[in-house]
Image (spheres, rainbow, N blue to C red):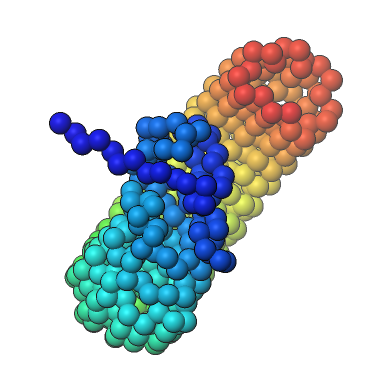
Length: 445
């Protein structure tokens, strides 16, 4: 037989505001002591008592603390708390070890974190005096951010998810090769990542000292975005998900044809993508050096937005999801009728969209050259916002979701009564048909 949940009596000094909204409530408990401010937010939606009664029963919650000292009293008053966020802490951590989740932000006095070794998920941010993190080796999920005195992280090799961010004095990460999910962010002292080839998910961003990633080919998901010193990625062909966005030093991606999901957005030095035709998801947004995409017809999801040098997209008709946003060089989209989801927003050179009637989701926002949309009545979701040349929308009555934002040329919407979701914001010249839109479920004007 399940035990009765503990009853917690919230007295007048512990509770000042109780607000209930859709079974989610906030309790602001103030004045527990001079200048002690406690704000409590319960995240559980299970309420077993009446809030207008001095006795309330709940299951779990989250607490936010500012300069609060009497943590032993906190546990007695709210024994069901699992999560807390502490700001500008000035006292010992000895009474916080019973929490499951703790986010700790801002302190110059904390030196000993041994009391936190049993916490499940722990975030330590801007803890300036913290040097020794060896007691935290058993924490399951650990984030260390802006802790400038930390140098040794060798004891953290058994943490499951570890984030080390803006810790400028951390240089040696060789002991972290067994961490399942490891993120090293803006740690400029880190240069050698050769021991991290067994991590399942590895993120190394803005670490300007990292140049050699040849040992990381065994990582399942690797994100080394904005690592401008990296030039050679030839050993990363076995990575399943690889993110190289903003790696402007990379020019040769010919070895990456076996990657399942590849992001080389804003890699302006890449010109040849002919070997990437077997990649399932490929993101080339902003790769202004790439002009020939004829080999990419077998890609399932392809984003070549802002590749202004691309003019011929005739070989991309079998791509399921295709994004050509801002590809001003592309003018002929007649071969793209078989694409399931197509975004050619801001492709100002496109005029004829008559072949796109079978596309399920079609986005033409800002295509100012488009004037005739009569062939698009079978599209399920259609966005022709800011297509100022469009006047006649009478053929679009069967579209489920239709966005006409800023279509200043549209005056008559009487045929759109069957649309489920219709957005007419910024269409000031409509004079006919608003009465016919009473049956539209979601109408925005």
